[in-house]
Each structure stands twice: as C-alpha cells, then as structure tokens.
Amino acid sequence: MSIHTAKRSRPLSPNVQIYRPQLTSVLSILNRITGVALSGAAVALVIWLLMAAAGPQAYDVVQGAVASWIGQVMLFGTTFAFFLHLCGGIRHLVWDTVHGLELRSIYISGWVVVAASIALTLAAWVISFLMKG
Amino acid sequence: MRSPLARAIGLGSAREGVRHWWAERISAVALLPLTLWFAASIIAHTGSDYTTFVAWLRTPLVATLMILLLIALFHHTALGLQVVIEDYIHSGGKFAAVIAVRLGCFALAIAGFVATLRIAFSS
Image (cartoon, rainbow over the protein chains, first blue to last red):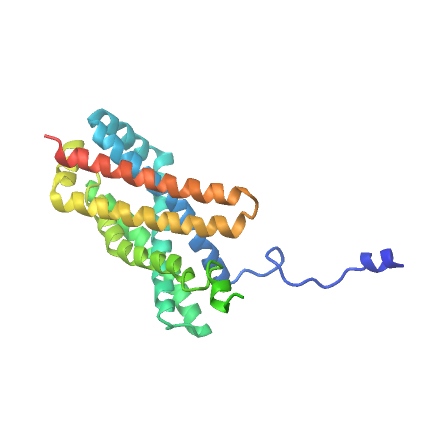
C-alpha cells in the first residue's frame, strides 16, 4: 500500500530543470559565470605582464597566442564577459542604493544590460579593428 | 549566563557579515574606472609592437594605474570566488578551496606588481 502511494507521481515544486528561464534568473547566474570566467582572464593578465617583463621574445609568444584564431575567440568571449559583468555590476550597485527594485524596472534594466553589453563588445572590436589599420 | 550578543558574535550577524559584502562593493566601484581605462588602453594599442607597449607601461601614471588595477581586481576576484565556493561546496574541501583562492589571488597580484615594476624601472 505504502509502496503504491510512493509511486504515484506527485506535483513537485519548480526547480531549475523544468522552470522556464526568465531574464532575471538568467542574468543572475550569468553574472556569477562571467565573474568566474573573468578570474581566468585575471590570471591571463598576470601571465601577459610577466611575459612582457621577461623580454621581447617572451612577449611575442603571448602576442602570437592572442593573434591565433582560438586566442581571438577567447578574447572576444572575455570582452563580452567583461562588459556583461561590468553592466550587471552597475545594476547591482544601483539596487544597493534601493533604486529600481520594482519588477518593471528590473526587467527594463535587465534588457539595458543585455543591449549595452552587446553594443560595447561590438564597439570595442570595431574600434580595435580600425586601430590596426 | 550568556547575553544574546555574546551568543550572536562570530555567527555572522554581529556587524561582521557586512564587511565582505561592503569590500566587494568598494572594489567594484574602484574597478569601474580602472577596467575601463585598461580596456580603452588595450584597444588603443592594437597592433603596437613591444617597444611601444613597454614605453606605455613605463610611464609613472600607467604603472600606478596598473598596480591599482591588480589590487582591486584580485581583491574583488578573491571575494567573489569565495562566495561561489561557499555556495556550492559544503564538504570539508570548502575551507581548503577558500584558502587556495585567497593565497592564489595574493600570489598573482604580487607577481603582477613585480612584472609591472620590473618594466617600469628597467633601463
């Protein structure tokens, strides 16, 4: 009897597997994921400085790695992660001042973060491309 | 006999818990101008050779800003990663992971200082 009832499918509380993703929850976890990814970029920054301090040959190795297609893909990803974490961080700092916490404002600022991150990433790469001449 | 305050001290809410949160915000505010300066500088140096790059990093203002960036960046990274570890790791490995992150961030920041100063003071 008790085995029978245990087998009956019961409604479960919503969890991450069956819950429709929302802008709010997706941006929340992305802020964390980009933060962890940018930790890797911080390590790369130190390696870059150490190689520059080691001399021109070591520096050229780094520049060669960055110029490779996989380096460029990673740099593009880092650029987007940086701007998303930056814009998301500004949104958090605004919330910390107890502003923009109404549901409507939260969605508006969320879409502003998405749009600004994409625009800034593209702008950075276009300007960089123009600098190369 | 223990007062309610004595029982609460050390459990995270006796005005201690806010320190981590506050430090994360202060480092975030510092990182706003510093990271934007760094990103703009890197974009401006696209295609620059070693000599140009080193000449840029050698100027006192740039070397100072680079060290400030390293301090704020690794302070913020250590605080952020600690929260991630504390949220997802509940076994005994938690403390080891937090200590590893703290020491790792400290070591990386120092390595960054040495590299920057080496370039700044090289003849």
